[in-house]
Length: 462
Image (tube, rainbow, N blue to C red):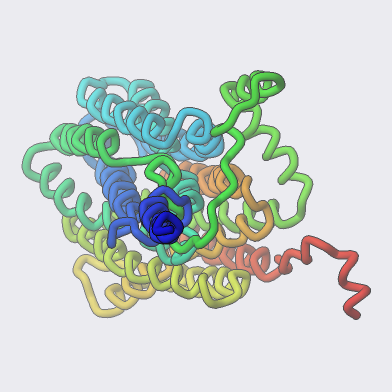
């Protein structure tokens, strides 16, 4: 008769022992610091290191002109090719990250950039600069472009996505802040080759960190994306069925997915508005100011290290502006943010030609602060609009939008150099950039909110 009570006690033990094996608790019982923040920190370091490559061209303009006699137009052509390949590589890199993983693509890109930068110390002909800095560094840096940021934030973050996007975007500015003064000092005291070797060494130093700490997806660690409460549906690559998947995998290897996404996105009006405005973004930042600010300041008698310090100061305020822009993107209409950013940038560029002088004066400092806050503030709302319109394909679509950014940067980097060679001044380039910003603001404001996914319900609710 005492046997029945025993089963009554037994059920309580299995329930306690079964609790750790249930799938629901792992997310709450994870580490206090979600691993998404570790991934974000690694990406931040990678982007800071890669920013050294974007800091170098403006500093090399005068030394290469002095040593080899190459004109501003010739040197700008290498920078232009770099930016063009940087943009063309980005969407394919996003597809390759889906296929081969973020870690492999990032590590390979850093190695390629290190080789390209290191090889420049042996060049004696202008075509060698086109090969090393234009092709090798361009393809490598394109694989570490903003599509990399879109892929990481899309996989690892649900909450705070706009803020993290802003922080990672600001890493490029932080890289300028770290590298520009140091590289300017190295070039001044030890020659331009020391700067190229320093950039290559810093790039190589980041590779082991990427291989050790970077992870592909939260599911690899049994986690949910930061801020998620439900298990995400596994991506198609994670559970390949035996039959029809090999053709699609082959397509991904060949980059056909990136082209397919482009074909679909190119049939929509929002894609062209985003790509057009972002092309002007590239033209008025990396292409013009990032490449030609230091030589333009030199035309007015400013010492190169002083001009490099001003451009680094742009990076300081860019960090603040981009992070704040990410915070605003989580709360405000991205279309209106973009329109405001472009109008403010255009106004500041129209005033710049009158501000150059031999020494730094308060008006130039005001420009640096104002322009710095706006430098890459356009990225978080642009990525948000890509996600709004293109969903899961947003990283690849943004890769193509970023391609437009780099095409615009490449055209203006080359064009401004030719303007300087022909007119002896950059003034026309600054005024033209200000006018382009008005067009970019118009493109942003012409974007409309995406209609609901189930339009048949609209008449019923009305």
